[in-house]
Image 1: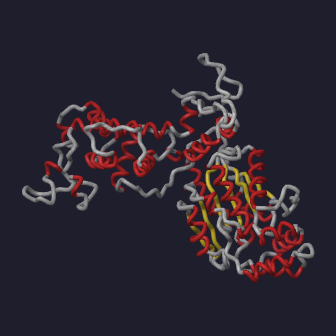
Image 2 (image 1 turned 60 degrees about the vertical axis):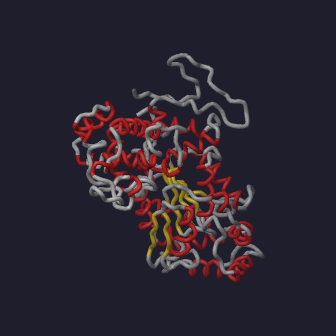
Length: 496
């Protein structure tokens, strides 16, 4: 690795539901064991938290942001239950935008969560809930009814008593503010769509925030989300199904959110600091997120993407396949977005077409042994018109990944005289020179995608992005000699 401290155990920042407190995560914490550091927070006006810093949604978001920043976590998830889910989504959006001095968000877990949009709620129920706190804290009957209405089955007595106690000590101001304003606010414009690992859990017996609402409202915010419904559960999921919630979080981290390359605490804190401009921090925050293990190509076919992954593994081998950058997926996304370096070889078609042709010419690549793959790529780089290269260049013929609907690209087989399909000699229309030129571009794209990741920047000893935040004179660097390091710089052990 690079610096001497890298957090391997992720931190969960857990935000509770309306009327509850940080205590509702106690059973989930017990079920998670030592695999996670759980930091459950009291939102303003709930649990032990006062209302001195305000009770609006924005007040809660700012307080949560301050507490995460104060903690200093560098590899973390947000867990939001009900009301806390809305707060979690807003904090996530701001973090990915580089705001708040936070870095290291790896994903979001939503438990029967309120969406960034107005929460679906019956007007009469809203009126009754506001009236219940008009004259002071909730009375015993209101608290009892609230718990009973929000569970699929009675809670164990200790947890039931805890939920009732949390409701009794809830600030009337905070309670009323949520029903009157917070739950009605629409934050969709700021939150937008978050390309972030997400686990969305619903109770099968929940009401307005049940499975349908979760898929329709929160699913629209998190297109990468894994959805889980706990049959028979109501709304108070951390209290009703703590073991199942903990198991889902563990699987989510192992299979999705936790698969990104590791970044040391030291390096992550420099990114989070004022040395790094917020827009730069946002870019790095997005790049640091784990790639989607279920990524569906947008430009390439599945077969072409598989070939490109095999090529990437030889061009840019990564040490830890369980914590690697999916370089091929990132290149495909780059092609879909029309991004590039502003030029292309005059002898090549557009980038998407060139990639399709080049990867189709390497259709047998995944079936080769690693040594054979390296030999094939070396021949392409050299551009030698020998038999090996000709079989994958302009003389190879053979089947295409594209199938029969790509006639205009000249990639399907045909017979002489067939005007709708090219001949076998045209099946791989790249010349040797074109294949070599395309592969040069391909190598550049793969290496750029690797170098752009913060973990790679740390590995090669690059922290040149940390030259000061926007809105003030750039701090820059003062120690420029070889081997010299600024006092704020991370202690990077450079890999060469």
